Length: 354
Image (tube, rainbow, N blue to C red):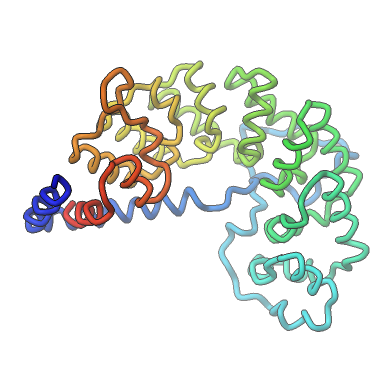
């Protein structure tokens, strides 16, 4: 059978493959670094601890480098106290635990442990829970939201309602608003003026209709509040270094807005492999933006395996066509069985002899 013959060929190539060990290790390390960048929780740089919509705000200088209030990205420090030691005597901490809040994560961020410990659940927390429930947020999401952004309890409830009302005025549906608040707990820290400027930037930069703008913001709420300097670098990379035209760029970011938050160097590396090695034109990449969102080493492994099997055929006008987006779908077992039409043993042996 073909797979058996292929396994014999792969076993015979093991000695030759030893010379590629160092290259493989470097590639894997690069892949791990890319994983670190991709899975890192994307938060909202530029948030200030006092965003009061009632007060007059100075115009935001989008060209200046914003200061991040992302406590999770700061280096962990040894906490001056352990919140666990206070749980038995603090009804607030007990309530937080029942909601699924990760107190250890909070106490590792400077100043937040002390802030949370001083909260009175009935006065300082419960009104915010009621507010979020009124917005359609599920109680199952409270633990993750409060772990990420306990500073929400510093915000004035009237300001929070104003910010929700702004989204309503922009015709964001109930489901869209719920997703935005759930997926990006930092959104409510941004004043209406600031969010309006951000949405205006996206609409003008990518020439989006109101519908597409709402779609982009709902699909990836973190992109709207992301660091502006990074966003501008990503746009420059997609335009100038990769060569996407205005229409292609617009379609790309609406389909996969998370691409704007990926480090530009990683995007260039992935695009280079997809465009040059896999031979996909810009138009096809726009139709399959999942490729740019996938790690380069994963693309390489799966494409080379398909190539070895004679199945790396991505032209829809030819026989044995394989949709490029299926290459990055599912785990290895799914890919081998449903895309490569092979078996996991053969794929594992292939990976060992690369």
